[in-house]
Structures are given as structure tokens and as C-alpha cells.
Image (cartoon, rainbow, N blue to C red; front, side, top):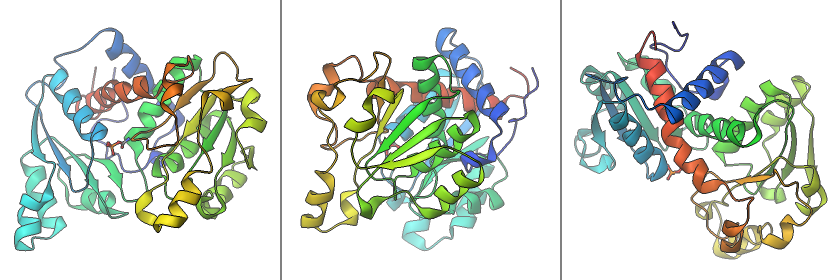
Length: 307
Ligand code: CP
């Protein structure tokens, strides 16, 4: 099967068509049920994390190993010539891409992945650039939603928490807008969904509403997508006020559909109480595990013309 993702950079979720997203999900389903330890044989993937990560880096590296590939890279850019000797990002990318077949990069600056793609001789995969985009998180979110609901079409999804800085929310709303979903945005005023994204949804004719609390829409939801309030962006008093506004407990889930699933990109702090973990709605740990299958699917498609 020839595929349109072969040798393609993965910078923003909006670079994908609906058909390409469906191809990645179908491939993730295939790899989860029938592991393919040969798909990255003789390939080397660079895994370069200029910013902290647990799930993204380790699931990428697990994905590479399980497909039979090799990994080079770093999880602490402090040991690189970029940090120690003032080498530019552009030169670093040229060098690292000459050693590898694909270049996975997380960076704190918005736009860093697109810049890297200009200088890389191999496909660049954005593993998160500042508060901008986190496309591979969206791929695993889509795969998880499909796995739990049997479809992506026409679902009702609430996004709760930090909708301003939460890059996973930005990417996921853009992707789900290709599938006719309805959105509820539930956030403190200071962390509301950015205007440019709301304008984009309006232009596409997507149905979305703002709400003050989860309880008033709970019985309509297929997916409740919780997010972390980013402590580093507030002073202590303001953080406590904002972060305590939306906390999911089993009581808040009263009246939910049996098929509702609670997702969270993780890490969580206090926004989902530990008691929710024991309810049938919690699916965030399975979601994190699905990062391996979604990233296996993406790497397999980017590095193999035919599967
Ligand atoms: N969800 C996510 O990106 O987690 P990490 O920051 O641990 O990679």
C-alpha cells in the first residue's frame, strides 16, 4: 500500500487531511493487534528533547525499539554543543539529520519544529513546540477516542481547564473539526480558548459553546477532555484560585452516559481526583499507553513507502 505520509514532515495537525488521519488510526489499530517488529529495521531515529517529557519521549523511543529501529538523541540539551558552545539550532539540525532517518524534536519555542524542517535532510516530527502544537499527542488522542467510541464522527466533546496555553487542546479541536464533532469549552476566563481558534471553528461552521461548569453538560458528553493548569504561568495565589475551579470527582460524573470516557494528556496535578481512576469512565492511562501504538503507526508510515 503506497501512502501519502512517506517522507513527510509532521509539524502541525492542520497539515493532515481527514484521510491521512484515518490512515494513521487504521495503522495504529493494525499494529496494536498485530505487532510488526520489522518496520524500522536498519533505520535510526533521532529523539531530541530540548524540554522535559516523560510520555512523549519514552513512548516514541519504545515505538522505535518495538519496530526494530535504533535511537540516538538526548533528553537534556544541556549536554549539547548548542547549549555549551553556542551552536545554532539550524546547524544542530543539519548535523543530527545527517546521522538519522527521522528527527523527533520537542522544543520550548513556538515554531521551532517548522524551522527545523527547513534545515533537516530527513522528516521532522514535532513532539511539542511551546504552547503551539503537539500533533502526535493528537494522533494518540484520536486513536483513543476511536478505540473507545468506535467512531470519530459526530461526537460531543468537552474540553476543561487550561484552554489558552494547552497545546493539546488546540491540536485536538482542529483535528476533530474534520469529523463534525460538537465542542463545549469550560475554562476560567483567564484561560479561555484563544480567539483565533474560535474564529477558525466559526469559519468552518463547527458547533461550539462556552459553559461555566461540567455538570450542566455531563449527560450529553462522549468525551470529557481534562487538562492541567500550568502553574508556571501564575503567581501562587492566582494559581490556587484558577486551578481549584475545575476539579473532576466521581460526584461530578453523575448522570454521565455509560460510554463516556475521561481523557487527559497527563501529567495531572489536582484536576482529576484519584477516586476517578476507579470509575469505568477513566481512560487516561490507556490513552498514554496508546501513545506507543499511534507513534509506531506514524513512524512506520513516514519511513516506509509501502506497508
Ligand atoms: N502528554 C505529554 O506530552 O506528556 P509529556 O510532557 O510527559 O511528554
